[in-house]
Image 1 (cartoon, rainbow, N blue to C red):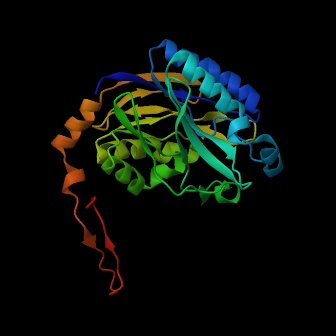
Image 2 (spheres, rainbow, N blue to C red):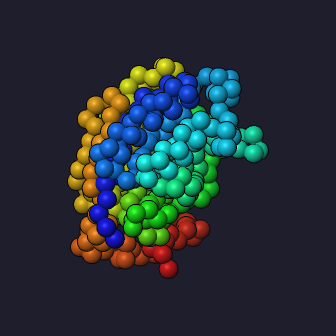
Length: 288
């Protein structure tokens, strides 16, 4: 397993997929020029659109999507692994998926992942979000191989569900992805600590490309794209909410070293929860 450079691209996607595709190309080329061979973009790279009717009119199937086509072309031209953190894709059944796509250096689609956990929350400042009203949740975790590392997929709100990352780590993932469009309020409170926790818990690198700033549809996202090493150290950060590219070296051997020092993936045990009921379930702490 060799060392390679990973890039996280910070964007401020607007309501036009065409304009966002132009911004995507500029930033991906900048990342590749810095030597990155794995490049990740944020959640909803294609467009952030709050209005339901406008959203329905803007999104299309994967084979017709301009961001997908642009990413496929760039991956092939630049010879990189290009990970669209997510974009809205119209499924064959007419429902929308919040879908991540990974393209290989030949432009082929290596993997897709549909966001599992829907952001249905009511925040203190009056913000209210019901992602499940617009998108159909995924049902399958995904791990795939890139450049000698194994990549585990997640999107934004998935970050708050550590069991997803643990399952991917147990399946061999030593690089975890968390492309996001975190709100400013939740980002200021929890972004850094949760990303570092997922890295530490699993002895894995975490790459988290973020949306940042005030968007055309009125929402405000936190930015602060991060790359965290398996010991929980931040090794690259866009310490603001402006569009940017951050790059850091990924050495899969460091994940193996962290897991050797703290072998919690191996040491986990099954246990029961005593909640005063004979019906309490048994929980699994590690793969059998």
